[in-house]
Image (cartoon, rainbow, N blue to C red; front, top):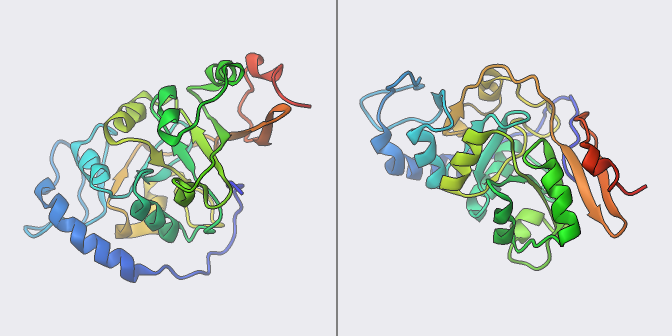
Length: 254
């Protein structure tokens, strides 16, 4: 259901036609961004409209904020690995991320939030016994799978009626999320290829089909550990090797 990473040969062709139309429409929205300044690098900058694929050095970049706020897509560092992110509240943006990654349409993506109270935005209200568990693992590299009923967020849960949510430890990222809202955040790689460890690798995957890249150097961290809520308690759905907090170990179902 949720990602387990494999290294393989990417044989699928991306449908770039739709992406090209969205990119053309989006240029008018971000045309005010202009050319690089303040140590930011711009790819293909000219005196004309802004081309896609800018590289910035900070999660607090105004250019990054403007792009995400308008429904664009970016590759950013998280508290685990690079993710390809976009607004979780824009169905069009979510579907675009799926196309860019050639992701299996029934596989949900992890959602990043800024504060535990953001769970309410997805009608997720954990019982008190679960809230104490969440306090033990958040903020941190643990994504928790919650039940998500109804059709409102069907474009996110993809028919599974579950959402995987993470509250990252990366404070600049949380500040960005407070400004633009929760972000869909699968790893920055096409389906079945290894996650990008650098912006150079991410650009090889996505090129100018992504509007913005945030360069934080080589990322050697691991993907998040997936935890799932069951009637018997919390279970580890994907063990990525992160140390399990002591407060959580006693709550894990056998």
